[in-house]
Length: 100
Image (cartoon, rainbow, N blue to C red; front, side):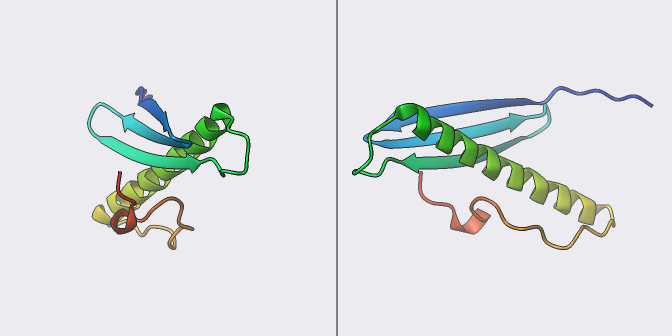
């Protein structure tokens, strides 16, 4: 049986005072998952906004990916499947996220 879906990821970037913040939002039509990332320019470095955007966006996508994998692990456990051993953690654990 063939099944096709379209999932959308929106990426939002904000740069202020040498810090770039990124938010990646996955919307699959049923639920949304959000990841976040941040990049800060070292005061001794030349400020190149494109580099901060790339770093913050990559970190937000990595955080989003880790959250999606944790959701899949929870769903596997809920249906009685045994998930793989714990994955290497990426991004912030849910209870240790920095303030926005």
